[in-house]
Image (cartoon, rainbow, N blue to C red; front, top):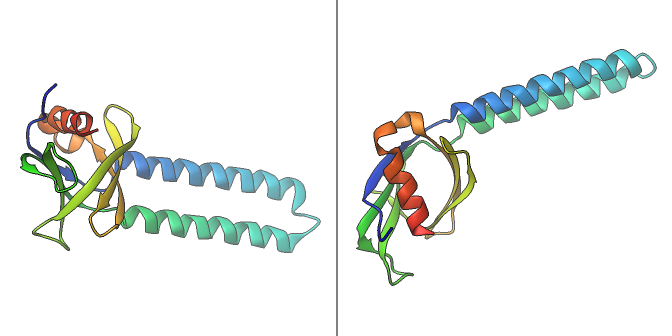
Length: 152
């Protein structure tokens, strides 16, 4: 592949991430329940600590999912990147930056074919972690994956 086509892809809160957080919460609650049945009779205050830690994790999980970045990731095959001699540049658009934020790097961290975890590094050294999902725009999914592969 010589170059990838320009593409704009919607990014939102990922259902896979939500299901993973729910699964971890259920596993944590199950482990806590079994531990409380076996060990908490001797130290009831420790059961309260365990419940508080689990509730803290649930609050963190909900906060983390609701705080997931929402916007559009754009690959422009015709523009020039200042750092690189080759053509092509990434841009992140969200409600906070409607004109878009140029990105220095977009790294694929986890690639599950229909879900990809990306690390977006902007020019101001701000890092965003986003999940992109095929279901958001199945027609442009192949173009986005080509851009991710061609850019690296």
